[in-house]
Length: 102
View (cartoon, rainbow, N blue to C red):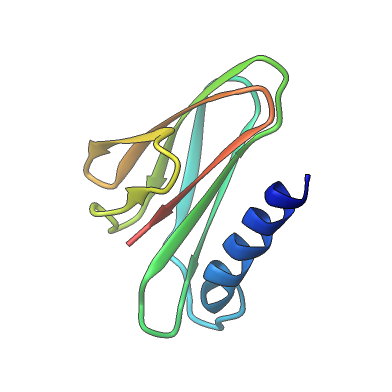
């Protein structure tokens, strides 16, 4: 489990400038299509946004995540696809997650 813990610690370190910033993040909404999915966006002091997406599980989950004004976010784990116009489709299995970043 040490490798998994190291990956989580590295992700938190990578996101720290977003999570600890006082900058206002863009409005983010979730339209659930299946399962229990939540998302929140954070903006660092340089204006770059990271959106964290989690599925609570169990089973399959799917949701459209809308991040106001952000059309160029990239999925870190490949579980979220851009739909255009600041909307993204997340699909997960069980307890799952993804991170969208500029």
